[in-house]
Image (tube, rainbow, N blue to C red; front, top):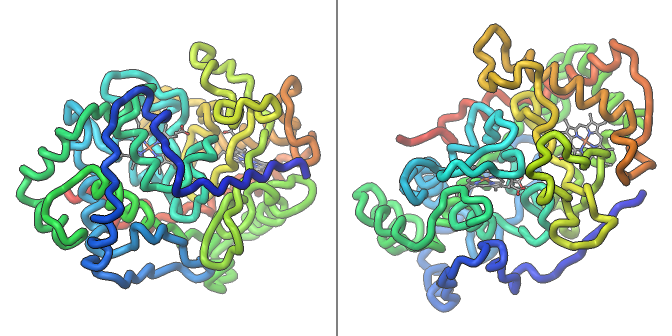
Length: 399
Ligand code: HEC
Ligand code: HEC
């Protein structure tokens, strides 16, 4: 298998300032204060994991607590986190779409279009590398700086710490910061840490597949879905090589895995002709490494909740035919849209991917499915939707 295994032991040393594109951020992580705080933090967190799910690994610098998760939920939905107070994380990560947003590309507070499709956040706690293609994005504590402060593209558009003053001025927050961090005053780092804890709590493991596979309910999947699952896990379609394991991705790190595993693949999509004006920033792993064989390589997304995370791929290039109507109110259900778009994805794989691009030819090569087999595969993918996750009040807006 032609897989690249990047082994970067720079997690704690990594300085992500280049990601912030010229912003002069004060790095206010003060290790001494942090150590003192660690002792004040209430420890012990009940993950309440679904059967079959390993325990996520959490950076020791930011242990989980109920208080942080709850604070993080407020912050995730709070528009105080954007420069003009018009957007929050939840503007591009919407619960009913498993925290994706049903758009080809999102735009930030200035209207600038993001060159990548919004990712869903189900089980993000297990991703040892975040975003579509950045192996330097090693944890959630770092990642949130990009939407908050990034200038290219602008997402939440923060340019200074005024948002911290806004939080401190809101009477709901001091008691919550006190409970979470032992200090009633908000600061930039604690905001990011609480956001990370909330996102780690977003565990999704109650799909029909989970009931069948992990809860021993053999009638949870119908015969078509079972046939689709066997195809998915078979050597004809090869899907499981890159989308395997309990989280349907080969990028994973948790209590039962010996090491951090992360891979980048080309699945035969990187001509990016779909949105040509943006193509200069769309070369996958190459954008970060500059190595020509990395052109077109992306992290294989987790296929959990794939029935609601359309449009698919880093460039949103697979969408249902009614793509101008992302909320699908004109007679098309979400399921109809996903079926339509997933059929296109499977046809893409059957075709062996774009012919002009380098790809993992052992796994991305032409094969043929009958119409019924293709339907079975789509039905199986739709059985990965966890309705409970999409409506669970624990992840919903507190406002
Ligand atoms: C303007 C829309 C937008 C906003 C606002 C936004 N995001 Fe995102 N998010 C995206 C896009 C697009 C990606 C994919 C980025 C990439 O690959 O470069 C992403 C990726 C992520 C990821 C990586 C997921 C994965 O599977 O690796 C996390 C985590 C995340 N966002 C959290 C947040 C948080 C926390 C906030 C608020 C502080 C936020 N996002 C605000 C659009 C947005
Ligand atoms: C060689 C590894 C590899 C194989 C094999 C593979 N995929 Fe993928 N898959 C990827 C990568 C990488 C992406 C993201 C590519 C991109 O964004 O351009 C992806 C994206 C997807 C997506 C879109 C996910 C999203 O959130 O946008 C779906 C659906 C999908 N694959 C299904 C399948 C199915 C079904 C099969 C088997 C027929 C399969 N994949 C085989 C690597 C693979």
